Length: 365
Image (cartoon, rainbow, N blue to C red; front, side, top):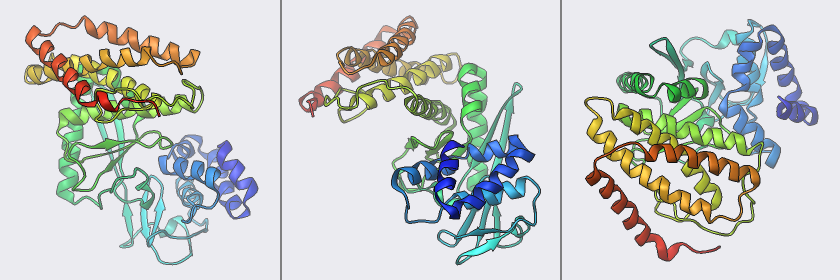
C-alpha cells in the first residue's frame, strides 16, 4: 500500500486509479486486500519504483478496474491502455481491446471477456484456493516462456493433478499443506518445451509460482512446497539482511550444476529442507514408500553437505547465522530418519560424485 501510495503521489496519471482502489478498500477491505496481494501488481509496483517508466502500460489502472468490479461500482469508468490487445483485470480475467480506451465493470462480459480459472480444493477440511493464470499478459515475469490459455482437457488434467497433490500434502505433510494454503494463490503454467519438471518463483511475486503443467501429482506436491519456501525467504530478505551483499565467494550447492553465491546457497538449503521433510513424510504412503525413501536420502545427503558450505561462509550476519542454526536443527532431526543402509550409501555417493564434478569451478569471484 505504501509503494502504491508513493507512486500515486508522484504521478498524476496513477492518482485516479489509486483513489478507486482506496475507495474499494473502505467498502470491502477483504476483497481489496486480495487485489493488493496480487502478484503482478507487486512485480509492476516494485519495478516502477526501481526503474521509473517500464515501457509497458501501468498495472495500477487494471487493479482499479478490478476494485471497481469487486466493490459493486459497475458504472466506474477506468482509462486503460491494453497490453498486447488485452486488458487484464486482476483475479477476474482479461478483456480483449485495442488502443487506449475507457472500461467499466459492466464491460466484463460477452465474447471479448475471458474469466480466470479459480479452483478450490478441500481435503479433511483444509482448503486450497488457487488461481490458474494462463491469461494475464503480465504473468511473463519469470524469465521463462509461459503457456497460452490451456484447453479444456489440459485444464481438467491439471486440476486433477493439483487435487491429488493436495490430497497427498494434507494427508501426509499437514504442516506444509497449511503453509501452502496460506501462501500460494497463483499457478502459472509454463510453455511446452520448457525443461521437464521446471518450476520458478519471482522475488516480488509472493504467492505465485510458474511450473510445468505436466508434473505428476507427487512432484507437484513437492514443487508447491519447494517454491513457497523461496517466496517466504524472499519476503524475509525484504525485511532482514541475512548476509553481506559483497561476498565474492561461490559455494558448492549439491542440487545445482553450478557454484552458487551465498544468497543462492541459503535459498537452496532452506527450500530443500522443506522438500526433505515432505519426502520423509511420504515414506508412509504404501505406494510411494520406495520412491520417497530414495528421494529423501538424496536430499538429506545434499543438505548435510550444504551445511558444511554454510559453516565456511564468513558473510552471514547475526540474523543469517541464526537462520542457518535453525536450518541445521531441522536437518539434524532429518538425520534421525531411518533409511536402508544401501539407499543411504547410494545417496551419499551421488552427492560425492556431484562435488567431484564441480570442485574445479568452486572459486572466489
